[in-house]
Every structure is written in structure tokens, then in C-alpha cells.
Amino acid sequence: MKIILVAGARPNFMKVAPIIRSIKTRQNNTTIEYRLVHTGQHYDANMSESFFDDLGIPAPDYHLNAGGGSHSEQTAKIMVAFEKVCLDEAPDVVLVVGDVNSTLACSIVAKKLLIKVAHVEAGLRSFDLTMPEEINRMVTDAITDYFFTTEKHGNENLLREGKSNGAIHFVGHVMIDNLLFQHAKVLNTNSTFFSNHDLKERLGNYLFLTLHRPSNVDDKERLFDIVRALNQVAEEIPILFPVHPRTRKMMDSFGMRMSERIVQLEPLGYQEALFLWKDALCVFTDSGGLQEETTGLGVPCFTIRDNTERPVTVEEGTNTLIGTTGANILAAYDSLKTGNIKTGSIPELWDGKAAQRIVNILIEDVASR
Image (cartoon, rainbow, N blue to C red; front, side, top):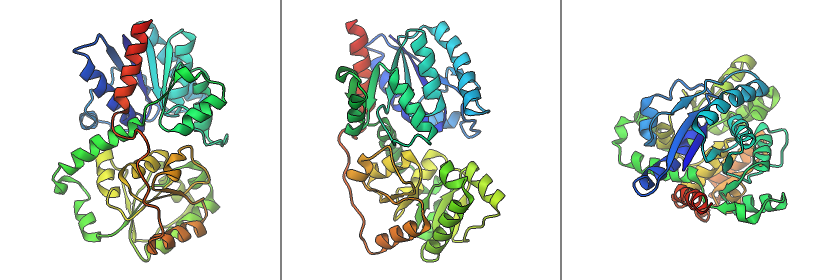
């Protein structure tokens, strides 16, 4: 059996890494090969050899260098380059993760070449068609053969869309597999090795912030409203803020300034970020993945969005959806101060074994054919 694993951006590698580690544990007993493809959708200078060492995986077998351009240009470049890979490798399955353009592009290529498509994180829906990610999720799931879901809402969405129950597999979440793997490494590392150790020790109590979603940072009026509220919160407690390049660009273009008590950091590697947010009093974010990871470690999270494709983090976890206004941010902080926040629980099957389940299902299914 041969699987092609597709990743287009740094977060995708976090999801693919547990699957590769699981495949490696099976290779002595099962004939199974994999190829890792980096589409190059997002250029990231920090993805060095040490990045893959930290994930416990080798560097990609293919790098398609297909980044840049509009959504259409990027998707087209990925499709052309990935078709050549598929023709050369002739895999049994192409496995895609998440909801980036690479997910969509490589799924279409595989399906047209009559190669089975497996989608990890299938069935997630925000029901917001202004989000490019929602289009990618919906189109990918329209042609997927193996739906690997992270929560029961994913199953429900897929069944409502007419997908076969036998093709839907509730396996848990590979992002939590990676989180638990990396958390153990952070705990076993001398904390002085982390670049922000001294800052963390000096601050004691702090909040952690990420902000990058175009609907938040590209709208001048909305971003000013959010920043004004965060500046007000920072008067009482410092905020650590690794600034996304997109957010930096927009803040500079708007001439926007943050409080000095919002400590602006360069983008952080996974372990460096985890070292900080795991001990924050709470996290403010508009990230999808951080909603899940904070739930995985029981850290209070306030999501600066009007909707989420990850409702289990709100219904069972530590996540609270607060909208995008400054007033809502201040209200969320007030609830934190008064202790009126949810403690949450760990969702079903978020146990670090999702990748094992995925690999087992694929091996058993291909072997039965």
C-alpha cells in the first residue's frame, strides 16, 4: 500500500506528523509506503531541518514550490505540479488534511486520476461561505472516499449532505495527537532553553493573543475596535502577542499602535508558542487550531469570531465564542476576572491515538479489496 500525504502550510505538517509516526510503527509488520508532499502553498523560512526533527518526521519527499498568487493561481499551480507526482508514484490513497487550498487542489487531482481520497478533519462546517476555507472543506468532502472526523458534528454534517455512513470514520483529532506529543517534549525540556523563558518568568501572569483572520485584520474599523479593547485589557494584565506577518502588514498600513504592555513577538515555532500559551490565564484568538488545542490542555479560550467550525470546543471544551467587537472582548475579560469561565472537558477520542485509528482503517480497507 502506498499513501501520499499532502501538506501545504506549517499547521498541516502538525497534523500529518502523527500519521507518519503511526505508519512507521506499522512498517515492520505491514507493507506500507508513504510519500510526503509539501505543496509550498505558504513559504516559511523557519521550516528548517530542526522543524521536522521536532515533529519526529523526515523532510518532505517532494516540494512543489506552488505558493504565491491569487487563490485561483495558487490552486492551479498546485494541481499541475501534483498531477506529475501522482503519475510518477501511482499511490493507492492521497491523504489531505484541513481546509487550505492544497487540500482542495490535491483532492481534485487525485479523484480525476481515480485515486482514493482521504480527508482528515472532514465534515467541519462554519456555514460561512465568505470564508475560503469553508469552500475548500465543502468541495473536498464532495469527492472524498474516506472521511476522518474529529467530532460528532462532522459526522452529522456529512450525513446531512448525503455521504455514506460506511465511509465516515470518527477517529478523534490528529492535532491533539501532535499537541500531546509536543507537550510532553516541552515538559521534558529545560525551560531556560526557550527564547522567552526570562520574559515568562518576569511577567508571571499574562494573557496570550493570536490574531490573523482577514475578516478581523483587513477591516480597519474592526481592527481598531479590537486593538482599543486589547489595549484597555493590557492596562491590567500584560498580553503576549506573536504577530502574524499579515497582521503586522495591516497594522503598519493603518498606522495602528498597540500598548507597550502588549508584548509584540516575532512569529513563534510550535514549541516556543506552546511554552507560553499553556500557562496563560487565557488565550484570545481567531485561530481554528488554537481553539482545539486550548481545549486539549484545559486552557480558557476566547475566540474573536462570530462562528466556528469546531463547535465541540464550545459545547464541551474551554472555548467561548465572543464575536468581533471590542465591547465583547472587554466583557470576556471581565468574566475571566470574576472567575465566570468554563472549565470544560476533553472531547471524546481526543486521546492522542487518532493517527493510529486512521492508519489502521486505511490498511484494513485496502487489504480487503
